[in-house]
Length: 265
Ligand code: DCM
Ligand code: DCM
Ligand code: DCM
Ligand code: ZN
Ligand code: ZN
Image (cartoon, rainbow, N blue to C red; front, side):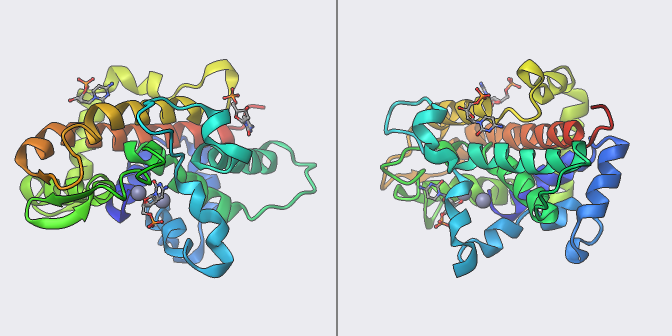
């Protein structure tokens, strides 16, 4: 996602933090965090092109083989170097600090929190598990209404931007409130299952990646080959997918952080 998507994921997550998570996150936020996680959730994008942070660039996605439409950790996350592996890794770092007071390994937990929060957003963007051959849609040149762009950008930014203009008075907080209402009144029966992990795991990103490539094949790549002009039909039919993925990202980020920071052993 772009800045707006990441801000929305983290703002929604904040509303589902348990008290222990509120306290722990507040302690870890950097000074420029303005007191809230959402303000720093785009930090991994701001730094990823700097020489000293280049190693993080591939951790934003887990591309999958062309036209397979499925995801496999051992195949698509070689050496754990992808968004799924990064979510496992930063969860483990925060867990060892939160649950093992004897731990003598000292990670930068502020960075770990910002990476985990950002990558939990990215893994829910369907094209972050898109095809290797087109770099997750980056090589698919399309027009968004009359603007030249690529399919990845459409899903990172354009659908959200058009929704803000068309439905939300150009206000991200109005859009976030609408998603919070949907979570409360429309998706209330799904929220618990979205947040739960199998087998007492703390983080379970693999199913999120599988969902993403499934949605990429069903919605993102469909009727969007290179040279296509995407307009109202594509926008109206794909916006519900984008909104649901942002909401799921928020719920799952909150649930994961709640498991990490809960006082229960
Ligand atoms: N994995 C990891 N770190 C963890 C848990 C899992 O790197 N703490 C990786 C290695 C496993 C893969 O994820 O092969 C799938 O794990 P699982 O089946 O537990 O989701
Ligand atoms: N991206 C991706 N798969 C790739 C390369 C990039 O999903 N193989 C994502 C990461 C960014 C966006 O596409 O969100 C643009 O990439 P970059 O910023 O590296 O140009
Ligand atoms: N959708 C989704 N995941 C699916 C199927 C559909 O995100 N497996 C998208 C398309 C729907 C929207 O979410 O228009 C709302 O879905 P639901 O009716 O399941 O709430
Ligand atoms: Zn992206
Ligand atoms: Zn990213």
